[in-house]
Image (cartoon, rainbow, N blue to C red; front, side, top):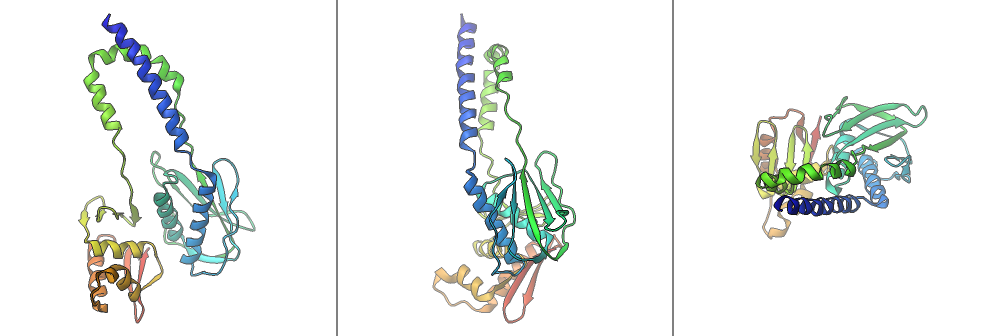
Length: 285
């Protein structure tokens, strides 16, 4: 009698699982308006990296279900790494997508002049890093890679064998379900070969785990949001020490940047450039 009870329970559990997965898929759908807002912000950040604070980002065009294009009012020039870093940062911050392809096309010939792919399964492809794109008219095309849809019919076919197997290995299945319920807290900013975790004040690479102080985290976050741009000393002093009500001198900023430079020294592509009389420029080559 016990196997039949288990079989009936398995049907109920699998039915609940199907409903939960279907509900979760619906819940995780991102509104199209939100996608457009994020893409327009990417265009805005790209213009800022090109030191263009006046040109407009034109309306985002939806090419098909998974592809969008970002247009710009005027010609501009920028470094290819700026586009890679900005897209990764904005997508991570807004939980928009983890697998995507970005094509940079010129307006006249509609030819691809630069492209990269972020793909957890096939592996990331980011060729031609560090290139300076000449002044021109560009269109940024972003394609969200489709996820494989779950086959509910195959799951239904597994109800009977899973019911009997579960009778003998229920502890193993319970452990697996617990492991699968753990939330992937993979929220970080990619800085060269380092992953910057702002919530836990940490820098991680393949060979090193580095703990940052609260002030180091604040400073590095400011630099990460202003790659290839001059960050003034006054801005750093105000945002890092402003709420402490103490007297801060320019030397404090120099010491803090020196500590960050040392902790990021394993990656030669990351540099802090001292801009005399103004502040610092954070560069990833």
